[in-house]
Image 1 (cartoon, rainbow, N blue to C red):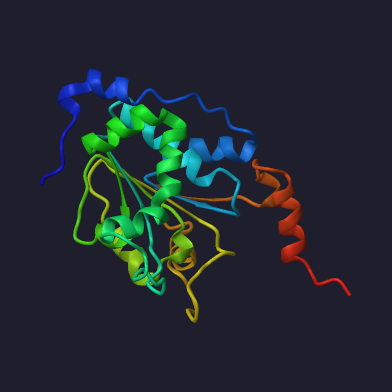
Image 2: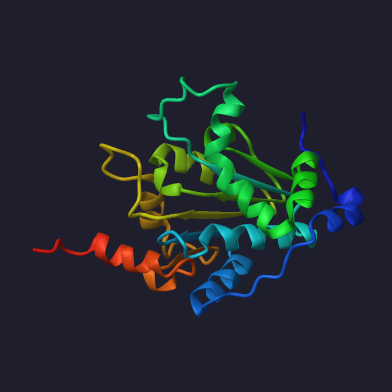
Length: 230
């Protein structure tokens, strides 16, 4: 099935993409939001709770609503070492739980009803990273979440999917990679190679001071990442 072009039904699309307002909670989030407007490829790095993926989804939905793009693709790597065999259902049902955080982010911005309408229309697509291979997407925003769990080959594959009039937002926490026995993950490799390479590529680095979830998260990270007590 080919990619559906929704420009012919802009009124319906605007109704389906009524995006809840989002006010940045700190200067880092505000800078990140502006960065995504101006850059073709944006990397958002930092610990959980800083709003990396949540803000990326909001920015993408705004562009969809305003007709800047025709489609949003949200993707995550599914760790190859995970044992899915014991899980019930077909492949889609097995991987669905691993993609739930992306569904949650879209529902938070749109509400459940509008989110379901956009997913049904294929204007918003959520899928595992492996399913991106071979695709080239024009007028699309592609968000890669949990990118610290990509291999170098997977990251290279994703970055080369970008088409005309498209943008990419890549988020992850370099301190929480689930890849074992690998010297360098795809996110670390890409930011090391691409930082400063082009005015169209930006890298935003959050830290624990920018966490906007429960303040206990910041305190726990300080102790978990600090020296052991004697």
